[in-house]
Image (cartoon, rainbow, N blue to C red; front, side, top):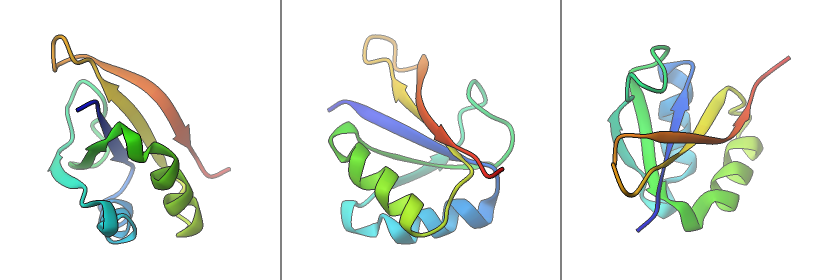
Length: 87
C-alpha cells in the first residue's frame, strides 16, 4: 500500500477532514514533526484515494492542508505532493 499523510494548520480542520473522509476510513495519527509543527493531528490514507480526498476537502471548505507521500523504502521520508491554502 502506498500511503499519504495529510497535515493541517488546525485541529478543527483535522477533525472536519476526518468526518469528510469517513467513507475511506482515514487513520488518525500524530503529525510527523519532519512535516509540520502546526497541528498535532494528521490523517493517513491509501494513495489511491488522493483525488477523492482533495475533492472532499475542497467541497467541505477545508483549505489549509498539505499532502505528503510516504517514502516506501524508509517509511520516514515524506515528499510533498499537494497543498491548498486560503488567501
